[in-house]
Amino acid sequence: MHHPSRGKPQDIFLLARRPASTLRSALLCLLTAAWLCAGLARGQQPAPDWRAEVRRAAAAQDWTAALRIVEREITRAPQDMDVRAWRARVLAGAGRLPEAEREYREILAASSNDPDNWLGLGSVLMREGRATEALRSFDRAVALAPRRADLHAARGRALRAGGNARAAKREFQKALELEPGNGEAHAGLLFVRSEPRHELHVAMNTDLLSFADARHDEGTSLISRWTPNWSTNVGGNFYQRAGVNAGKFVASVSASRAHWGALTLGGAAAHDNDIIPKSEAFFDYDRGWNLREQGALRGIEVTYGQHWYWFTTARILTLNSTAIFYLPREWTWTLGVIAARSHFSGTGVEWRPSGVAKLGFPLRMRGDRQLTGNLFFAVGTENFAKVDQIGSFSSQTYGGGLRFQFTARQYLSGFAAYQRRTQDRQQTSLGFEYGVRF
Image (cartoon, rainbow, N blue to C red; front, side):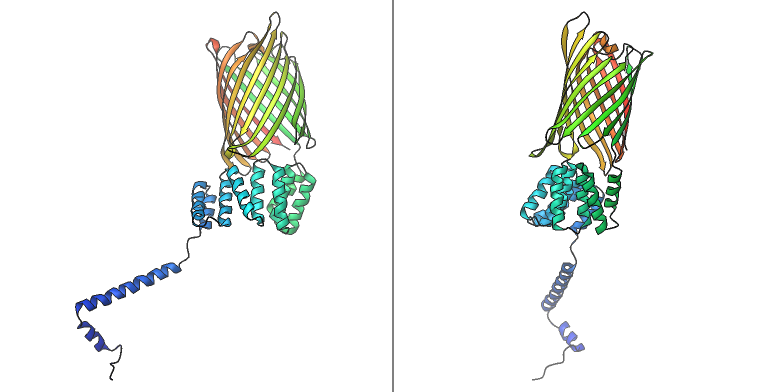
């Protein structure tokens, strides 16, 4: 049987003579084939790299976008521990430390053989001020990957925070042996070699009064940490009141232990000129608790103290109690109560209460450069010091402040407050403080 040759020009002529329905069917087949080829080509193109998207969002500190990306990936693969680990890193970067800690612990409960997850958990614990627990996490990470310099450097940080400078130095040296160019180990070793023991604080305050001349105070103090458990604080304060100058010397010693807190004992002696206390004595007891799984509360710190003031014509005792609540994302809430017992010459004894509430919050946190703010409100009565000593008054005080830590060893803080008193009197206070560690 004779078969015509394929691909010859006459075939096209014959096709043109076929019915229109046949032509339409052929064109439809050609379009369908083209669409399938295009789809296959698209399918061969690589999917967008979600990790690169997260890195870009994190570099821009757009933590909302970064979290949205990892949440999308978790929806696609809820059992993928790598995606969960990225979520924990993003939560930590966003300052949501309790959530990041919880995520890391869930990951490690499912699989505990990844040193990066132990490193991530330890880093979160360090930021929460829990150096002892962080050290245990870093120990696990080092045991899994003993040849990684970054893990030894992280362990060195935890040891340094716990006051074990000698062991921290060994860890930083080990990190440098494994990776001579490790910048964190170089910086940590330099810091350990020159670990600052002292903090110098310089402060200045001005009170503008609607009923008297302005008052000025200046003060300086030196805190010295001689061992991880013992420290001293010495300083002087100077006062100017209506052309009269006065000054006092203050000293205290503190002992601290991780399991029972810190106790401070101190006193002051003054060249009073009848405008400040002639002498003072005080003590404070401070205790804190870390709360890992107690909802939104990360920790609590409680301080109780008593302060005795001996004026020329009065004796004052104050009972002070303060509670600091550590909230998520580096927020804090402080409540303080003071009860003052006053005894003036020729008068009886009376008690006067006062209280303060303060909200602290982060504004910008990037490494050692940190900017934080606070707002506070105080209410109560006072009846001591010279202007305050003559009679008593009630007041409401509104204020706020900023603290800028511009290096690991230096900070500058300032505050402003407005006080409204009885008898239609007002007071505006301004002040700043500079601190440096050396």
